[in-house]
Image (cartoon, rainbow, N blue to C red; front, side, top):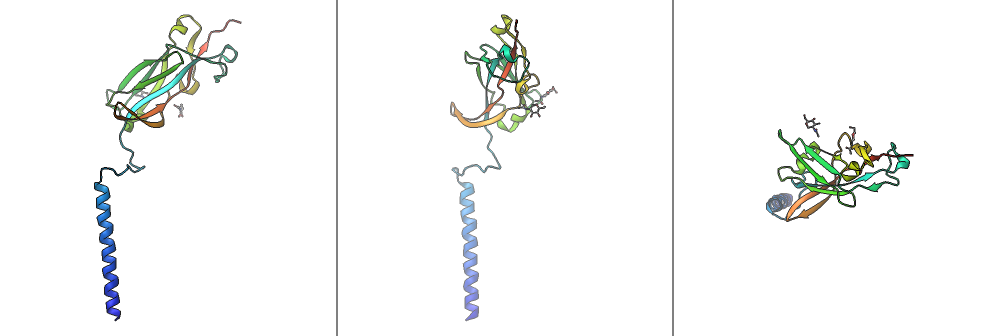
Length: 174
Ligand SMILES: *[C@@H]1O[C@H](CO)[C@@H](O)[C@H](O)[C@H]1NC(C)=O
Ligand SMILES: *[C@@H]1O[C@H](CO)[C@@H](O)[C@H](O)[C@H]1NC(C)=O
């Protein structure tokens, strides 16, 4: 009697482990398996941010109180993802906002090799009103990209990264 129960237990265990192996094989082969958080899938890189002209009231102080959006400022991104790397530039719109899609050879695996920073103030600089780049949020040394969310752009999976906000110092006559 005891032997029969032992044999039954053994069979049951065997079946459980076989079922386990079977379901594991199915799930790893399935194309709809979500990526595990520890192994984030490779995506493309998009970067956004803002550039401001600081208020005369706070010239030289790291704050955006009273600052106004800077249109036409150039923002550069440089990455050491490969020996040659990737560099690109874009300009802010009338709201001081910029957005860029990095070339496809740059993926999220290498986002930490990138820095972004403003290079030129644009028309406001030409008018002499906002000329000197502020170190706010690493504007002069280059800011690291902070992941904000996943987005789909033209059928491609991107991660949208944020940098800044950056600022230029106003030239103030008092
Ligand atoms: C990329 O490499 C250049 C040249 O070696 C270096 O000056 C720069 O700081 C590097 N950038 C990053 C983000 O590591
Ligand atoms: C700014 O620079 C400092 C010093 O290099 C660094 O520790 C920090 O992570 C940087 N932050 C960003 C957002 O780039």
